[in-house]
Image (cartoon, rainbow, N blue to C red; front, side):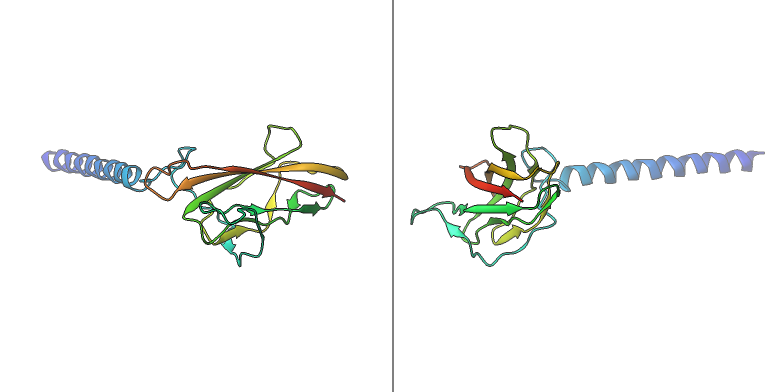
Length: 167
């Protein structure tokens, strides 16, 4: 009888020790696994679909120093489609992350928001929340920029407007 009680005690002690170890591991992960936080508080989240970018886009900086913002002329996407092939790039010369928020006309509701894009990377294709009917629209590519520091300090951003042809 004594042996059976001792065995149950040991089992409870082992179970308690395992739970304490798991709780400590989870605490360490939450503390150190998400050291840097993005503005949404999700930890640093780099855009998974971003790929190396060769930099062939119109430069709108007009020779000024600072953050390089890509320019866009006219853009065409298919009507009724939710997958758009538009390059959203962060020029290699930059030393900051880009985050794109895309809106149409005067709407404040984004149809697409990227995660952070590293310098020299670009998203070449993305899914929008809703397809558009054929016609011409004004697309707003809102670019938020963040320092590559521990706090992801917000920097100057830009809004690039272009004509969007939906055909």
